[in-house]
Each structure stands twice: as C-alpha cells, then as structure tokens.
Length: 391
Image (cartoon, rainbow, N blue to C red; front, side, top):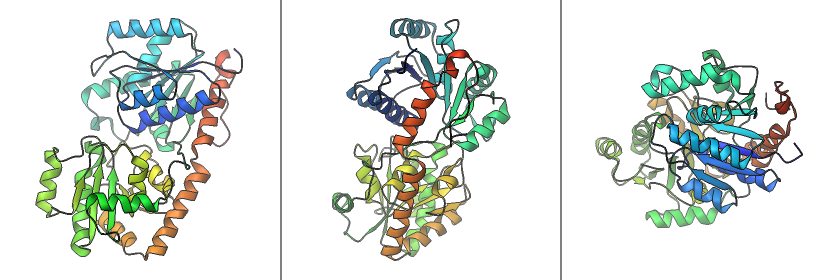
C-alpha cells in the first residue's frame, strides 16, 4: 500500500446526529488530505448522506430495517468491499462495528471500530442493544484498533470486556472557522423569535431522546425563569418541536408557555449556537462527548453541562459542571452564568472558544485519523503504537 490508503466507513445510518456529523467531518477532511473515502449506511440515507455526497465522497445506502443486519444487506456490503477494494474498514457505532466485522471476515483487511457512547450500566440499554453490545465485546479482539471519542468510554468498555490492546482515544473535532461568535446571528435569531435584542436566551441543542433529558432541562429552566422573567428558553433538534407531546406537557405544567421556543431540526446550526447566551447539556447517561457543547464553545458560548462522559473535561473551567439528574443544581448553575455582567460572560465564552482551538481543533483531529490510517502497523497485524497525545 502507498501513502494514500483507501478507507471504507460503515455506519448504522446517516440521520442528523453526533456520530454521523463526525463521520462527515472526518471523511471530507481526509478526502481533502488525499485519502480516498467511501461511506456505507446500513439503513436508508438521511441529511448527512447528502452532505457527504456534496463533498465528493461516495455513499452507499443498504436500506436495512432498524435492528440486526439482514443477510441480503451483508451480501451487498461484501460486494461493495470487493468492488471498492479498501485498504482499511472502519466501523462506526455498535451495529456498524458488527457489520464491518462481517464485511472483513476472511479478507485480511485491517478492521477498525469506533465507539461513540459511554457504558454506565448495560441494563439501561434496550434489549436488542444489550445483545449487540455483548456481541461487540466478544468480537472486539478482531479489531486492530478501537477508537473512542471519550476517555471515560474507553475505560468503561474495556472494563466490560472490550479488547484493550488496540484502544485509542481520538476526541471530536470542531471547525473554528465555521463555528465562531456572530453578533449578527444573535440579533437575527432574536428578531425571528420576536424577542428584544437584549433578551437572555439559554438553550439545549440535541435530538429528542430520553438520555438527552430535555424534560429535566425544562424543569430547571422554569426555576430560572421564576427568578429572571426576561429569560427565554430554546430547544432544537430532531423531534424537538411542537408535535412532541412530552415536551408540551412539561411546558404546560411548569408554566413556561410563551418562554419556550421549540425549533425542531435547524439547518444553520452555527448561527443558532452563536445566538445563545448559555448552552446546556443535561444528559443523564450514555453521552460520551457532546458535539453540541463543543460547537457552542467554538462559538464563544459558555456552557453548563452534567458530569456525564467527558463533558467536564471538555468544558474545563470555562463553564459549569453539575451532577446528572440534579435539576436544582442545573438551575443554580444557569442562574450563575446568566447573572454575570455581559463582559464577564463573553470573556468566559472566549475562554471556551480558545479551549476548543487548543484541544479539539478539527484539523488536528483529522490529521490524527490520517496518521492512524496510514500506520503500516495496521497491515502487519501488530497492535499499533499510541498516537502522540491520543492515548
């Protein structure tokens, strides 16, 4: 193999989500660095598949139903492997990892996995997910490298039985050119929402899922609004809209009506982050490394996060960290940041942006992936050495 290995990525699906967006960023950056890329989605495509194609990367959609891979789908995946002739096969998330294992059996191709969540307690997972995670653990020795986007995730999975020899931490990366402070975006979003220019806006940006804990954030926000009536609350993400009965119920019972803006999926996510005064991650468990928090920090927005996954390590001293499921602590931390004078809050946001620039820059992360895929140890079958700064 020469200096430009061909990389085949296999992922569960390409709807809007943290893992899917990180794959988009990695594949497009690596393509620009001269490493040919191909992406396979086990299910139907989605918004991220179109973004990947628009960047010039080949995308295949197998259209498998949700759940375990089908025989016909796996046969099609093997056909793609034979036709595209990759030098490395990279699985993404548990189902993608299993499919990558099946696609490489008997081929001699280097198999890599990518784990994108924490594993606090297997009983918290759905029954099928438990089976898939157990299968990942049993088969993990076949992967020459297992990439984790969270240090805690690596410790938890290896404690559960995932092979430790090839474990490697590569964090999420963020484009600090595209993600930046934007006063015009702040004004534009307030006009769109019908708010005065000086209105304080706090928000949570994530797909709707129990582990994201949008309801808990709303209950904490109600405590804040009771003390600061001028504060408004924004939620955005797939399933976070006026059709969500659970969110409507919490808004009604907390008396937040008129203060909450449910936006659903937003295309211009950079401007949305930049419009906020404070951003929140209220996750209970599973969260390994919140992309939304990294994006908000890159936009110079201070954050309040629950101590789940690597969130505390990402935020550092540039925001506030509270225990998960502690709505009183979450409300108090939000009150503290919103009460800061504007210059002090903006200075904290600039510190957050600088932290992303120093530790989670997308270009540096892409170069780390490139170095991993170019490592000749993958071809010999030896466990590769740790990349500097990543183990």
